[in-house]
Image (cartoon, rainbow, N blue to C red):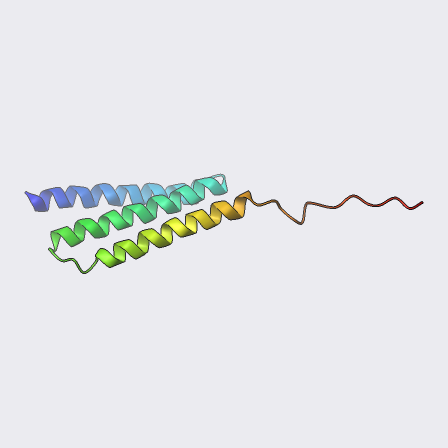
Length: 98
């Protein structure tokens, strides 16, 4: 019974990863691509958790922690990068000569 549930969960998480990949490829904006990357990161962490539970081992729990931390930090960094003003477009006004 647990093998069937784990198989269904792995299939659902695989579909979520494919949906995230589609979001990265077809997303018209950078925010869509960031969302797709975050979706793949969370789905892969869930997949590792399900496989760790199925294999009855705790060896992969640190990997889940590192993967989710890197995914979160990269999402925050990309959003921070997108929100800063573009310094190349900010042209200071010219001073008039007397």
